Length: 434
Image 1 (spheres, rainbow, N blue to C red):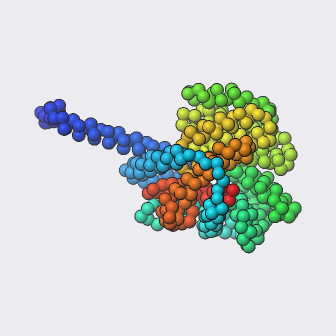
Image 2: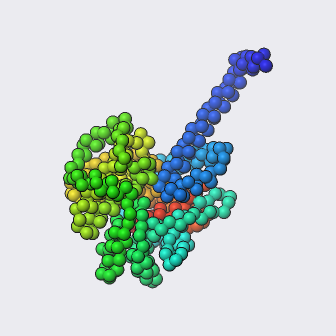
Image 3: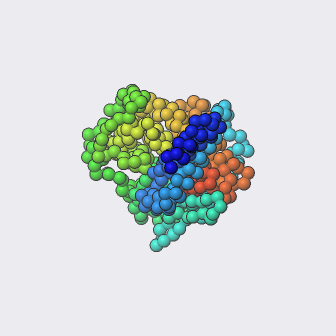
């Protein structure tokens, strides 16, 4: 055996072609390992914002180790390819010109298709409506419909509200009013914006005073994560005590912080929840004029920011939503320190070049807010760039590069495995109808 091994070694030492072949195989193996690692991290990020039960179910569905490695390799390859497309899209010169009339009509038509798709996800049980989390599909297999989640009714309601304001289609307003009456009798445990979205409806003349009271009830009848502990910390938290330069200096430091707290988000999913709560509580303050909500918002915001500082070497894909929470903090206080921080967080978000749809949605929403805040046309150009990217590469319809199953909805930019997420599609409707 030793002689055979020695013979093989001598062969590789003496043969230049054999050495080149061995080197090539080593490079290929290294690339495969890197793609598997990238794919595993991408799957983990994709699952991070899902409810825990759905997250566990999807992880179990991955199968044995060989199936997982195959899935991660394919996902890693998809991620790299999509990242290259996104980089190419970012290299297109930014035009500050507004969308043309034809583009606006096209975007409205796409929004209509997505609204129709959302309607297919609605389920009713015991007179309570909920929506499926969406669909998971593979290129050569039928799509699998995900379980329902009651928390999705709010972003879907918000998307209908924007769609009706643009189209005035009969039946939409009646359906919204019926849903509001039903939702007001229920309780929610939101994992994303809730009061922030409902606040738009409350400010609209479409609804009567009684209906606006029902909308307020939906906002208030919620249970927040770690609320009791956060409330205790919030008692001594001054929303105006905030130093942007200190935080920016820490973020520029290449090392992560090592801060430990029992209030910190446990993972990226909770990071998004905390960022969302900060915005929601600001809008509760706008609604009710209760300063205690500002202190709560600041506490959730502080913990989300601390989580990001602890993980800035591998930043969460939902970073744009922390930046959006910072804008809401600024709106509530007019403290210029928050404005300094959001300008910096916006720069960091633009550098991320994440490739999942939810991150691109966050970037589009952030640039839209930055434009409204500063009136700087570069932000409007960035908004249109991200929206065009979503339409071209994420919309599943014939004639688009995102064409997969012709579902008339947006997927996660995958090329072999694609997820059609209900919340993401609801948020995109508002972007299409800007």
